[in-house]
Structure formats: structure tokens, C-alpha cells
Image (cartoon, rainbow, N blue to C red; front, side, top):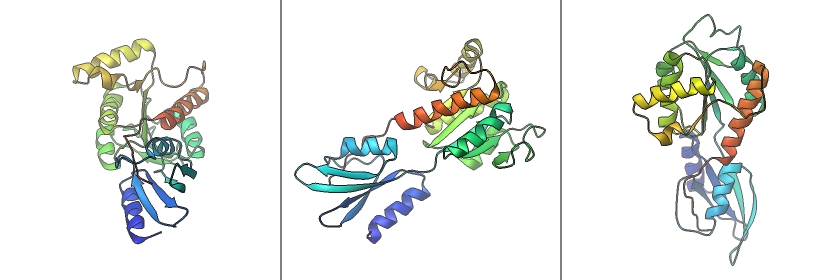
Length: 235
């Protein structure tokens, strides 16, 4: 790998951007394509699919031969608002699935190392904690407290940051009231439509663990189906 390609990969990793190394099998030359670039080449659809799936592999480009695509995606981050029972079940499941996990809850009685021994726990208001942690398109945010004072600011921040998944706990009636509050804060219907509420896939979940399974499944579904910005690359 040449130094220019390596430098681009390091810059993408620092910025938590997805990148693909395109290696020409015949010549051995390499180059890095960062998600969001558009240079008009024949690999556009293939790269978009690989940015979604994260799968590396060989590709044949008609008239140009074979290239190997090495996909490098940032580790997905789960930010859970609320150190509640669902979070206790969701955190270890998400870690097994490859997510980094951060729990945010200003209620210090809940946000403790004893309850969450293996993940980052931040006992601050979400607005303050998120400003430090940062959100991005490889972040999933789930709001689980049922308390608008805690959940709503985090949801607004997640939508503004382009998080690939934004979910909120509550019944359809509760979610309807949530949408009205967010409209009053200036969010449009497109933004509101990105909120998964009621949260999780409809599997009839009842217990905190079952709800956690439904949430994680919906998060993974959203990650693998996420919209990628137009990506073209000449091979």
C-alpha cells in the first residue's frame, strides 16, 4: 500500500468515515475511496453496496480486469439514553454484535458502574454528554427513559448528526405526544419520520431482554440498509 493511500485511510479512521481500498490485481496499485466521494467511475453501485455491508472481496470490472475491495468501516456506536433494565440487557448484546456502547443518564442512582460494569457510563444530562462524546452517521441512539426532559434533547441531537438509527421507547400514544413536542421545536416531517417509535422490530417482545433483542435487530437492519451518499470511483 502506498503512502498516499495509507494517509487517506488514517484520515478517514480519525474522522470516523468509511473507506474502501481498491487494489488493481494486475498492477498492484492501490487507492482509497472515502464514502461520499463521487468521481464518476464504474464501481459506483458496487462500492455503495460494500459501504453498507462492510464485506471485502474481489470484483471484476468489465474491460478493466479484477480489483480487490478492502472495506474499512468505523465501529458502530450505540448511545443509550437511560440506564434502565432494557439498557442492561441491550449493552452486552450490542457489544457481542460489534458495537461500542455508551450509556447516558443524569440520574446517578441508575448510572453506576455496578449496574453497567463493562461499558462507558456517563452520569450527565444528554446535551452535555453528547457534546463531549459526539454523534455521527455510524451512531445508533436509543432513548429509553420515558422522560422528555432526558430523551428529547438527545433525539434532536441524533437527528441533526445523521445517526443511522434513532429509536425511542413508548407506546404509539406516547410517541404521538413526542412527535408533537418535537414539531414545536421546529423538526420537520422528514426528520420525525426517521424516528423508530415504538422502538424495535415488532416481535411481540415483553420482557426487557426481549425488547433489547427487538431493538438490536432493528439497529442492525438499519445499519445494513442505511443510505450511502453517491459513491463513484474509477477502477
